[in-house]
Length: 344
Image 1 (spheres, rainbow, N blue to C red):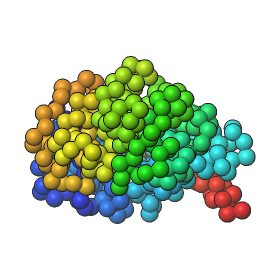
Image 2: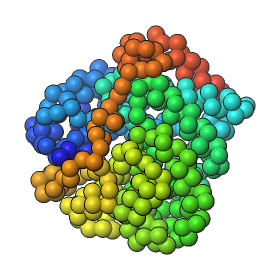
Image 3: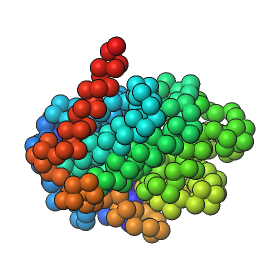
Image 4: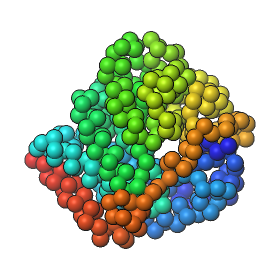
């Protein structure tokens, strides 16, 4: 079954890429900045990817806005999520901005043939430097309110929303890309703060990505490998019935559980529907060739595919259509207003 999402090295597919995409274990591909030169190249790449796969896989990208935006030239410069609360004159203005930016981000990504962006971040703006202004706020109620508006904008463009990094990465300082973060707090403290945005928005999310963070007062395994976090908390307590994506299994925060095959097997056994193996081609090959993929419990590929644009009634909009759209122009006005207020 198709439960692996992997990456490619360059601006076009090579022979090894095509062979891997045709493997029945592969159901998705995630793009990085190295895979983007301009919109025409990106659109051609996405078409080629779909032609190379034996079925209609999903194509994803990390395109949150702010520091995490894989495609920059020719794309709108989506502000960091903290900008809405920081620069808006009122809560109502922040909400409008968030919805417009959610639509703008999603419509531009989808116009190039990509199904979804791993967004939004639902972490608390706390001590984590790797999260920082990627978070909407340090206030749970504000996060829920503004993230809800951002998700609405994504939905209006036809894009599924993926909340990350469950149950919260903002209250631990270490960066799971290069370290193994450990959050020593009691379960009650996590439930009373970091977990709340996921709880409040779980019925609006099609996907959730757990953190490579260990919460030893709950489980000695990082959340993405923990049946307690994924099954007991996320599925049973929060009643989330969408797609659970592992975070990248090549990140340092995942190494605590073993080699790449072990990581993949443990993430799937814990309850992940789709596992990401990025920036490690040997590891990706090891996984698709040796790991038995479980029978899918839900149509996770169908749930994440791009859909018809609600806002424009056409969608997804083409790249040329998006700049003629009134919604796109409103988005440019918001970006410029935030830029001006930031400079004051």
